[in-house]
Image (cartoon, rainbow, N blue to C red; front, side, top):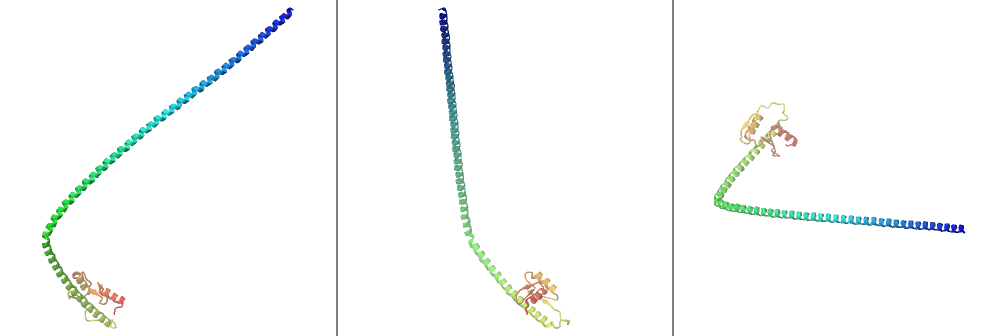
Length: 247
């Protein structure tokens, strides 16, 4: 009986121990759950803090962006103001330029008017001198006519002298042609060169050419009577006759 009681007590004790262990285990589970909940709450708090920081960053960026936009707007306003200022300056410069052009035009017109008045005055003076100038012009025309008449007479005389020289040269050429068969015979008669401009005679061609160059430098001492071409020496005209086959 005593053993039975002790056994019962032992069982009760074991059950008590088991019960205590079960309670302890449950307590631990409760503690774990509490810790888990605390961890979850901590994570939520962290996430909440992160969200708050993110919102703050967004707000900060938004504020910065707005500030930049405001700065850009201010810069654009300043730029527009500068453009308007430049346009105003250009407008003022254009107005000044137009005023200067107008002033120059007025000055030009004034000068032109002065010149016109002077020209009118000059024309009046010219009109008063027209009769004198007209008389002088008539006199000048008469003198020109006289000079032309003199020149015409000199030209006629020159043509006659050229014609005479051509005839003389033709006669000399005929004589040379006739004397060709007797080329080896000595010619006792001297050849004289006569100036067809003033009638002077010379024993040598050199003297004749020297006289012609001195007193008649605007003409030739020898002429071809067929083609009316002038030459400076008798040799030149002989070569011309030979090359052109003149008779």
